[in-house]
Amino acid sequence: MSAIPGRATSRSHPSPIKTVVVYRNGDAFFPGRRFVINPRQVSSFDSFLNTVTGGVEAPFGAVRNVYTPREGHRIQSLETLQHGEIYVAGGTERFKKMNQNEWGCGYLFFYPSFQIKPVVHSRIIVPARWRKFLHESCTINVFTNGDVLVPPARILIPKYTLRSWERVLAMVTEKVHLRTGAVHRLYTLDGTPLSGSVELENNHYYVATGVERFRLLPYSHWVPRKGLIQDIGLG
Picture (tube, rainbow, N blue to C red):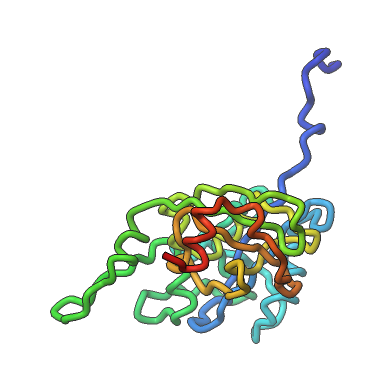
């Protein structure tokens, strides 16, 4: 059957590039590895497994299975993988479900359902910045590393995305197109690296980098005077 004139066929829409984070099965302290799934380079699920095998360097050897982190549902195709999500790589062994007491700090921070709460029966007070971080979205302006001719991308990050730094970086990757690929880090304009979502400030300006080094350039010429004063801390 011929295609209807003027209507695009499914073949005209290539599969989107996805970014996922993969952990080792049963390893509470493995920090996770980010993988960019480009259909032009990763054409099948088997090739994805081979890529993950080299990336996570698991003691169990080759990666044979990929699971969802909460229930351990097995992923069997590239189409099933969701952009910005977290997965667990395993070999031929069974999926090892871990509770919160078994997770390492890195895994616990990046887990989507994790929320920072004050310890019960303690005098620890959660700072106002953390409380705000958990309940509000955040809009940031992000420059492309090394390119002062391009204005910053304005990105609204929903509050549920802020719970995972990897999801934040994946979202920035969609908006800021680096020559080196995915965004790995965010910096302040003076070159200070950010370690997590809690360091983001609403309406502030940052620089996105990949595997390359941060380049200190006059990005501030794009910044409105009021925003610049706030960024450099003057009254």
